[in-house]
Image (cartoon, rainbow, N blue to C red):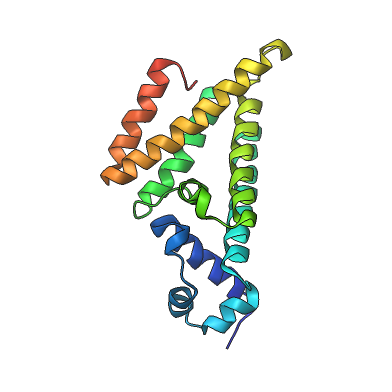
Length: 188
């Protein structure tokens, strides 16, 4: 029996699977078994794996926008906002050593359907735009190019720290990398 929130349960379960095993590790049959429905029920909501992957990445990016903008609204302090930002990526690791959903899918970029790739790229853009907004606080427009480069470097560094920490199975590696970025001046 399908309930009104079956689609949400499918997406939540699929998100956890992808964060743990990557997009290539997402199986409709295993997903259906985990959710407790038939595979046809998954296909009813998401006709293809690409449809599901794109929906997951889109929702993930939309959630990121809301979370990150709330940081900006809550505090004028750039350092405090950056700590909250890096804590978001840390939280995936603290949840069964999972990766950022779009970060793990980005590693499979060449194997992703076009609709999934577009949403994964959008997540990167969302992060960079937000970091530019944060880093631009109190700065002149003249510094825009340097700020955009720094935003890209920060995003790449945080995703990289998460990946290395996950590979080691040690969240302390993430913490050490983030602190090293602060000490080096990359992170405010």
